[in-house]
Length: 107
Length: 119
Image (tube, rainbow over all chains, first blue to last red; front, side):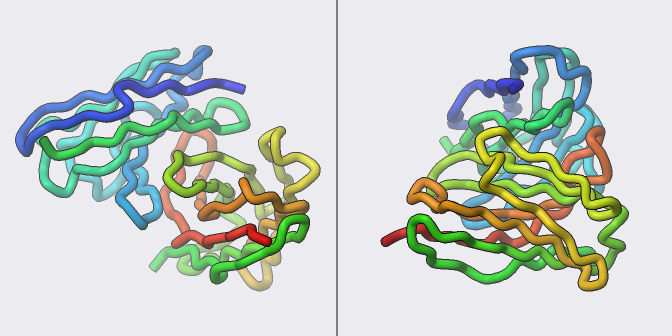
């Protein structure tokens, strides 16, 4: 199975900050990497697919990058509604494993 | 609108089975894959398996093989996930979600079904 490792596991930031979350795959996954946002008590929401493609209706402040084994999710200017947990997921080969999550909290 | 609506919460005893349904509306069920993902209390997301409703092909994570069954009823636009030999560590929220292929993420999710396993 492909292991996905996110860093950091938690992050404190302020409204307006630029933040970057990283995700590393245990082997190359080309660009088969997706990012999700999850708020408490809610289902996950797709933000980015294929490493850098912005899902419809997702604000342009979110961006993704990378290929192979190393990927990033960047939020250019944090908004109050962005404080949530973020997960990366590889869809290169089954099982389509998730990272352990990054909890983004208000400083 | 496009949505996936799941069946209600379940309370099961250890050793029993649970069957969760996921009804698609607003799109053609057979045009998208359906994934099953679970989340134990306070934990992260765990991918369980996938079904292609157009041909009934399935695949699952090795840890669930032999215990999970995914089926579909195209006439009802519904997919089912059955998990057997339940243990206390199967207590989780179970989500269904659709994707159009491996190059795309899971863009529509069900609301989740809470399964509690307790004696």
